[in-house]
Length: 493
Image (cartoon, rainbow, N blue to C red; front, top):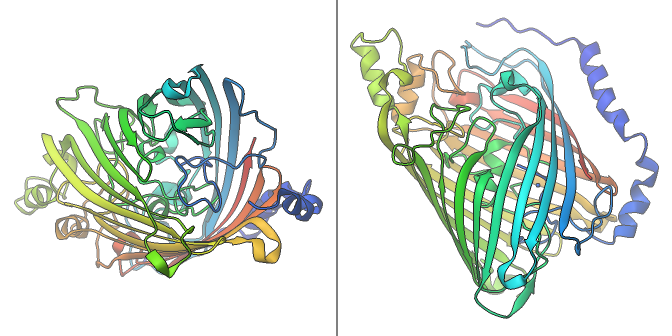
């Protein structure tokens, strides 16, 4: 049994106080700021209490500095600091990729500068160019290992990359309208037009993160203002094309109509699992995604007609240099390899595919619910996002209007992640994925309950308390449960 060790309480307390004291300049203004606002992007991109945002952007006025919707240019930014800790927990054994069962704490820092310009401002044929520069520093608990549903979406899975600034997104965005009827649109870091045709085509090409446009959910998408867990904010079974930082080069075509949207993307896959380098040979490797979105109340006459709902159906197919878990197990059992090694059986032209369902519904002006389901074939290795073959999530949020805090938010979610038999056998016999590997496995679903309270203090400044209770971390009955507690500070500039 692994020996348990406690982190120094003095150091833990000092780290907590450092973050909490950052709020010292604004607490006296918190109540009056929220009352003056009158109501209430991954990046901070949520529009609170708006069920169907085209993208998720911070509401007008809730930024540190004012921004004009009439300018051709957009200059804004964010900073997100997350402190996470957990106490020692039970573990009968640990491996190279295990969540550390001694107490630990880590802090991550993510900063993004959003730059945009409208090259052409005609609503029927608007053209945007987008450039985002980002810096990701700090660490995640256990270096982001040992959990399929990891507890901090801001964490980069390769800590050796460092915190030097890098280009996160660079895109050309073109709108082609099919009707003269214009509808209002909120300016976001990914789309600068404030009026768009009701029926239109949107084309995007460049470097991007696919979850900026696919599998969006206004309740469970934004790790800067909402939940923190990878498999609450994203569909864990969607192994979307991305490098280690979560970005890829891609092209997206999207058709928008009054009540529905269809979108398709073709993207570059990494050369190796969780790799930093992308394969530019699209004949050899690519990721294709298609999603249909229907904007219609899911509860019919059970709620007021103005209460909106959305359902999204996603499908993806990845072609890459991947291995089969069953081949790695066979090679180990016949003595070819000293332990199961998925890298040793990788082959070009391998195909991994899956499906997802994403739905949300507004119940009242303050209460919303959402659910996600995801499935992939699970025979080929988890390659780009996380080690989940099947997932189910259910959650809700509630705005603080009833206690005179309209820009505050309370959220609660449950997610259950699973892997298929071949994946289980691979881990049980000592195989390593890019996230998991305890050296053995007594399999059970990885179940997570997450709750947060997001506190708006002043203009674009928010603080949040978050707790995640995880049973069977890494799908292992012999380890856990563990409670991960977090403090988050977020600033929209």
